[in-house]
Length: 624
Image (cartoon, rainbow, N blue to C red; front, side):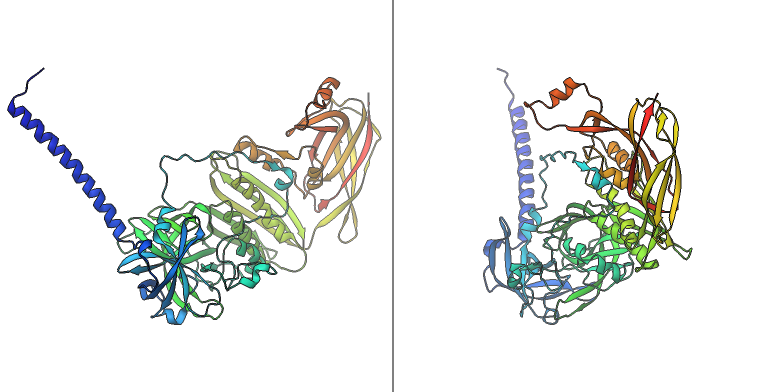
């Protein structure tokens, strides 16, 4: 064994002691930091009825004011499993005038200088300012991420051709947990729970200000807005313009300050106002209840100033005007919203151009939230509003829509449609929304939408017609020969118009009976043998959307009787009897759909003066 000198032993001892001391120092520092953080918060277990504290919120301008809070008790598990609610009573200061008001959500409550939580819930129609307070530990805890966790894989979804080719958008919005009535009446009209209105806590309303959106549009979309948790309780304010992000300092968005979350920015602006509960470095915690329960999100977050709080017997609310953008809201969950200062939001640029019936060009430019639920709804409103603000809302109108959705690394999704009649405005708006919604719910990780452009032309009157009958110039023809189809269409005025359509029989068509069908794209799409698809790639989905038949023009389709099958979206005509027998075996079921006719060819007819609907078919004989 090697022997060490006394000097060496002393040196080793000193080094070990120094290393241990450093480690102990780090441990002490970490413990001190955790203790410091914990000391900022008032422990839930120490709360007692009768305790008093203070709360902070902005009643006017940008400076938060204090008022009193008395703790009445704690209701365990009210928000959710292990998510309690603290009951308090407000008094003093401006709170005596306003009571609990829309926009107060997130106002911090302190006892002995330590943060208890956020004012977030209220009883509708309460005669006293009774509120629910979300504990700060629950607000912070729900946003803590598991660094070792891996996100679950998203599987491609099944699409039906019917939804891809639809002319009306049915959003199917989930019922928002947010405040869904002007006075806290979250139950549906006629619901048996209606008798309990006012007897249960509701999230305090988040006032949403609109600019560039007419009241008529808000009324038209009120059911969808309420279902999504968007409540236009404040008067319209000035449009918020996209601009450079303001650098945050030590006074940016502190507890009690007013904060705004933008849904759109630009010529059309929508912003929701609430209150900051707690700032931790560049982390912002606010509201104390969900805004839209959207989960992961990316909405512009800005400072705001309050014009005034309007006391109202029905529902008091604050009028707030957004100021400079300072970051983005990245999470929206059960116990509040979470944002980061200095983080740029991911918005989608939108341009809408409308050539009016007065030959005037109306152009709008704005940015819209990137969210699979919100984006289609907001774009639908914006397109509808653009048309309704410039054109007649009663009577017939024809609208031509051409647009594109630009996607990173992919061909753009293109839209080229026409709509006529009293529902033209609604259909025109949906023509852009439907492909956008299908992209957003596609679950492809490489989806990145770079911009949306909508070009529209309005024409007075409804240029619609119905296909009444068709004729062919010969009953027999050879493969490769051209036949002429005469289509007779009747317009809204009753006049009958004709259109001569040349159609060449494919050269490889076998002899026998051949059916020729003429119809609008929507009608033919409904009669397709293949009705569903599961796209394997984003490019395949975009290609399918772009190839969907259009319901504003005619198609000529020829088909003949065969024995085949549809497997997935693939048509297999003229299968051998042995294959058909195997598919029809009693030992298996499903996986295929038998077909008795096969499409031989199809051509798209260029759009005519009229938007023609309907379908007619006729048979001819293919001879040698």
